[in-house]
Structures are given as C-alpha cells and as structure tokens.
Amino acid sequence: MFELIVRGGWALWVILGCSIISLGVALERFLTLRRADVDAENLLNTVAGKIDTGDVAGALALSENTEGPVAETLAIGLRQLMFLESIDKKPEEIEAGIVQAMQDHGAHVIDFLETNLNLLATTASLGPILGMLGTVVGMIRAFGLISHQENISPSAVSGGISEALLCTAGGLIVAAMSTVEYNYFVARVNRFALKVQVAGTALVERVLHARYRAKSQANLQAVPA
Image 1 (cartoon, rainbow, N blue to C red):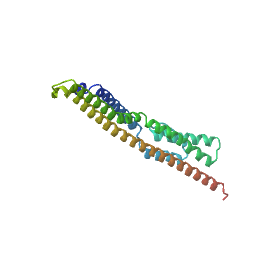
Image 2: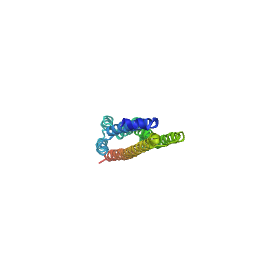
Image 3: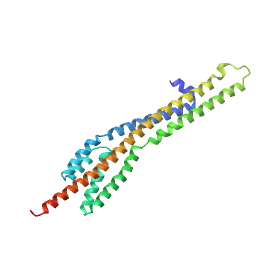
Image 4: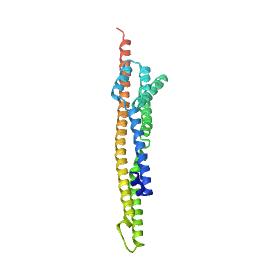
C-alpha cells in the first residue's frame, strides 16, 4: 500500500490526507449523534405526564438531566413557560413565547448537528479534482519522457501512466466514501430536526391542554353549589 502511494506522487498524498480527514469527521459525527440519540417519544411522554400533574419544575429537571437535542429543546420551552407565567403573561403570549424560544434554539441545534459536515462535502468534491490533477500531471510526465527518447519502451512511460491511474482511482475512492458519509449524516440530522419539531409542537399542545383543564376545574370549583 505504501509503495502504491509513493508511486502515485504528491497528488495521491493529498488525496490520502483528504481520506483521513473524511474518516475523522465521520467518526466524530457518529459518536456525537449517537450520544444525542435518545428515546424522544418516551422522554416526551414522561415530560407531558409531569406537566399534566402540574409538576413543571420536575419536567424541566428531567429535560435538563437528559442528553440530546430533543431534551435541550424541551428544557428551553419549559424555562420560557415558567418565566412567562411568573410575569403573568396571557395564555396566547405564553404560547407564542414558547414556540419562538424553541424555534430559535432549534436553529442552534441543527447548526451543532451539522458541524464539520461541510468538510465531508469538500472532500467529496475535492477528491475527483485532485485525482484529475494527478492524472494530468502523470500524463504530462509520461509524454514528456516520450518526447525526449528516440527508442520508446513501456518501462520509459510506465511511471507516469501508473501515477496518473493511481491518482484517478484514489480520488474516486475518496469522493465515493465522503459522499456516502455526507448523505448518511445529513439524513440523520434531518431525522433529529424532525424529532425536535415534533417534540416542540407536542409540548405546546400539552401545556395548553394542561392549562385549559386547570382553568376549567378552577371555574367549576368557583361555581356555587
């Protein structure tokens, strides 16, 4: 393997560097997304149950002690809920405030989940370019040797042609590998984004339902027998 890289010339060394960057980013993103991947449905049900019983502080503590973008977004919404209620905001203002807070945080979550994915996209597009450049340089070298020799033999031009072909193969391999990795992680980020959106919508619905039910019970108790 090392001999092939040496024969491939400088372009193949750069392509090898791109492959190392691609693998490093893929490993880092895989571990990060794995830690962030929690059972969003179970977490949401547990949080909603606490909200139904009026234990907003308990729901907030549960969200803060759980890793992942869904839990972080729920915590943002619950903190906003407690703050707006503490200053006696109207129900419609509370709803709008929770939605806005979670939407703003959702943008930061997506930005975090997409960290370094631009490097994968870059290596995917740079690999074939470097391969083509190495190929061109190798062919120039091969034809240069041909033009300076009267008796042409296969061994005289094999070095340049070998360099050209190795660069082409290396660039295509890196491009294919990076493209697969990039598409895989983009799909996972999109799934996370959907989970965050669904969790935010469900949280608002449960909060409004719990507040409406509490208000209805208070009105019933206020009615004289």
